[in-house]
Image 1 (tube, rainbow, N blue to C red):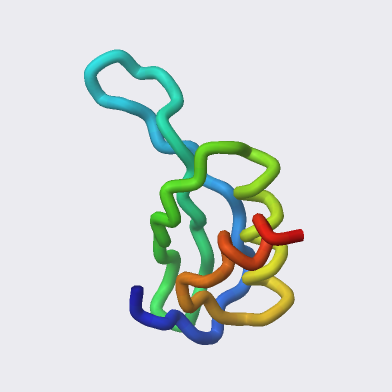
Image 2: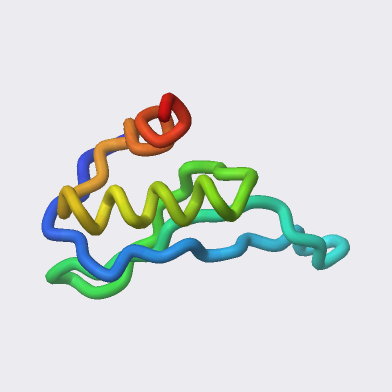
Length: 73
């Protein structure tokens, strides 16, 4: 994954299956200088998505290692 810098206001975003409308996974929505971006970490659980969003908010960037970092705690 490419690195996204200058991120703020990261939050979990539910992703739904189009065929049946059921919740499929979580992505992360965040703001940077260009507007809102979506980062798909393929997160299965809301608590993990919230932890990833909190980590991104604290560090100000996303480089793809965030889910690994929060899962190891």
